[in-house]
Image (cartoon, rainbow, N blue to C red; front, side, top):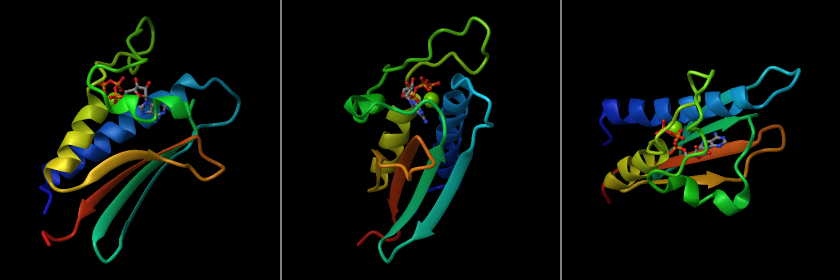
Length: 123
Ligand SMILES: Nc1ncnc2c1ncn2[C@@H]1O[C@H](COP(=O)(O)OP(=O)(O)OP(=O)(O)O)[C@@H](O)[C@H]1O
Ligand SMILES: [Mg+2]
């Protein structure tokens, strides 16, 4: 039901956020970003996980607010400059097709998991 261009946009937004989060985390170990997708009987589920700086649980809803960003400082990091629109658009895009976007608990080896659910049919 979801146009490929929208699906690509959702995935790309989550990817750039994950990339910023792993880049912002200083450390010896390389960062990791994982995409996983599956279908249940009703939903297509896309999850993007990363080992970056993480999102405090108090901000799990606020990150979807338009213009909420922690990445405005772009002095040296070309990825560092954000408008805070990505996740707002991801949620709106998913909801426009009857879906959802939320922060869910990440498995222990990851810091963050963003989950998008898209209905497989209109019923
Ligand atoms: N994977 C993540 N790990 C840690 N923090 C995240 C992650 N994804 C989003 N965030 C937090 O949520 C905020 C909002 O994300 P959002 O994608 O809406 O905006 P942005 O990436 O800052 O800017 P834009 O997407 O408009 O370029 C980010 O600034 C960051 O603080
Ligand atoms: Mg973003």
